Length: 157
Ligand SMILES: CC(C)(COP(=O)(O)OP(=O)(O)OC[C@H]1O[C@@H](n2cnc3c(N)ncnc32)[C@H](O)[C@@H]1OP(=O)(O)O)[C@@H](O)C(=O)NCCC(=O)NCCS
Image 1: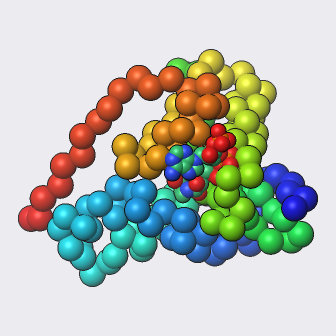
Image 2 (image 1 turned 135 degrees about the horizontal axis):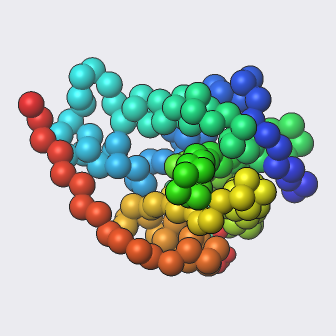
Image 3 (image 1 turned 90 degrees about the vertical axis):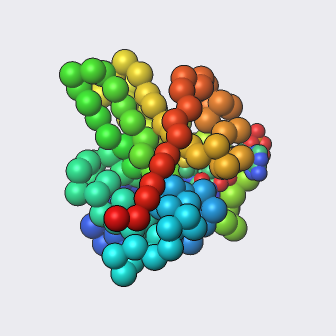
């Protein structure tokens, strides 16, 4: 499969939202919250997770990159830049299930890291859930070192 990585276009939004909802089952905090507390405010975890994409493209559209194979979107990565601290953050990354385990996740991360370097940043951060085996493996393989573990709590009001 010939895959190219290109900048985000506004017409990608619906596709990226759908890819996110399809990809993140079992590996998102939003679903863990729902598993613990049930449906909240009339919205399920997919609705909340799709909004993360809206936030990514609203905040830094030039830092969202889309992987395409023969005109079909098969993955994306989003980024944030904090020039004062020199920090680049990767809030979201997804590869379509049928395209996984062929190195595209790593290619997207490398693409984001090159973007950060071109922007003159000093370091990059990325988070994953402890339950996300692929994320835990991939980020270490891409040169990230574990620096902290955080515990999330939630309760109904
Ligand atoms: C994480 C994700 C983006 C990786 O995409 P990908 O295209 O499969 O990534 P790559 O092929 O470059 O690398 C995947 C690596 O994880 C490994 N891997 C896959 N499943 C694994 C598992 N269950 N346990 C351990 N390692 C696993 C693969 O063997 C590969 O490592 P290798 O190259 O050393 O063999 C993809 O799995 C995905 O979209 N997951 C759902 C959404 C998600 O978790 N996003 C990241 C949130 S932090």
